[in-house]
Each structure stands twice: as structure tokens, then as C-alpha cells.
Image (tube, rainbow, N blue to C red):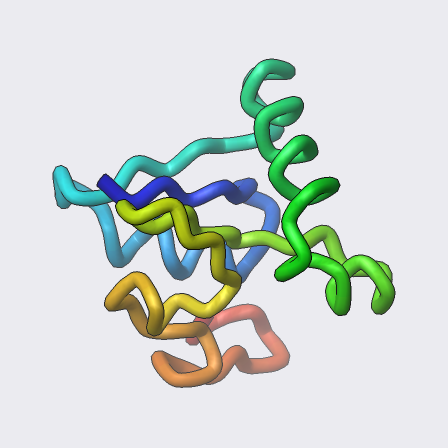
Length: 97
């Protein structure tokens, strides 16, 4: 099962979450809902080098994917999903996201 760490207020995360609805091969973990999930994400973020460039830019690093083999990635394609930029374009009025 692929774990996805994210938050509903993140448009990239919301786009990913819609893609996995009802798919038992994925589990979406809302890091804002439970402090234990936030702690697990922060442990991952603090100790995995994949997050370094994102932290340097001031990004949170979500959505984050933990693949079945333990690989951590921030690329939806690595999990067989489509990224927001590939899937649709956001319009100024907020539609299309």
C-alpha cells in the first residue's frame, strides 16, 4: 500500500486525493487531523534527503509518497498518479483545480 501524506488545504494534495478515492492500494494521511500523523510526517521530512531542496525553498513537502518498497518521493508519477500540472490547469476563479 502506498502512503500519501497531505492536507486538504493544499490544492496539490486535494488533486491527488481525488485520484485515489476508493482505491485500496493507497492510504491518504491528513497530517493536520492528528498530531501523531503530523509527527510521523515530520520524522520522515526531517530525516529523508528527498525533502532537502523543498525545505530550502521553504516548502512543506506535500504531497509526499511512501511507496511499498519504502522509497520516499514527492513525484506523483512515481506512485502511478498524475500531478496537478499534468492533469489540469487552475483558473483565476479557482475552478479547474
